Amino acid sequence: MDGDSDIDMVTRSGDQITWLENLGSLDTINSGQVPDRVRLLINFPNPFNPSTTIKYELSEQSSVTLKIYDIQGQHIQTLVSGIKESGEHEIQWNGLESNGNHVSSGVYLAKLQSSEHSNVIKMVYLR
Image (cartoon, rainbow, N blue to C red; front, top):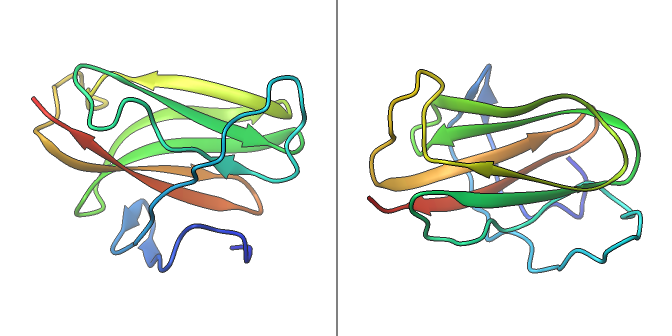
């Protein structure tokens, strides 16, 4: 992790996150500019129902994954997996698990992982 991360502490094993504290980034996306680092921005709306938009920025072309976890660290859904160009990206999550079932109300974590960076934000789903 780099020193600019909003993550206070992350302990992970495989696809499980066991603890973290993150308030997210309050930075806005500057249209048309290449970001100077990898950033995962706060989702909107938050809390959300039925869906939320997750935005992230890449400083260079990178292989990235964006995964959703429940508060116990169990993998719920993979939203992005592959090589993405530098710049601004966004994706919507509709509160579904990878098997198509709706998640329960609660706190969920979105984790953006690249080869050199990892960022996590908290999201609240209300049914």
